[in-house]
Image (cartoon, rainbow, N blue to C red; front, side, top):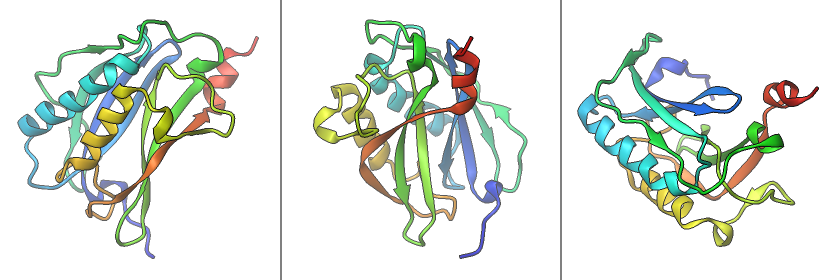
Length: 178
């Protein structure tokens, strides 16, 4: 399978604010997707996730890059989403992410990353559907249902795994160590 350039599809970028600094989630979309439609739908997806996010985690902005371009342009109208999960993100959990993984019908793998989820550490690094907070289940169901968003690098609608994987980013772990 030939490698495809990152700019193979239209991409939207959601910027997260976390205690260790900003993160970005890349969301691939079909060429026909308008910025207004993306703004409404992607914002609605992440509003669903807010009750499961720590109170010191925010989703701050949306940007877009056209097909065959790496230039990111802000999408006007995004309103900040603040986590309402009832606790702050502290200690080692600041370096933790969860990924919704998928595979396209043509075989390309991908994932959608999230930060700041308020869930206990997973012994096997897997957050199974039975353990999903309601906000995570609603968010995952919504992103899977979107026909024009959360597509694979090859432009096809992928099949998502039913679980999320927990991971610790080495760069952010290093930032936490004395």
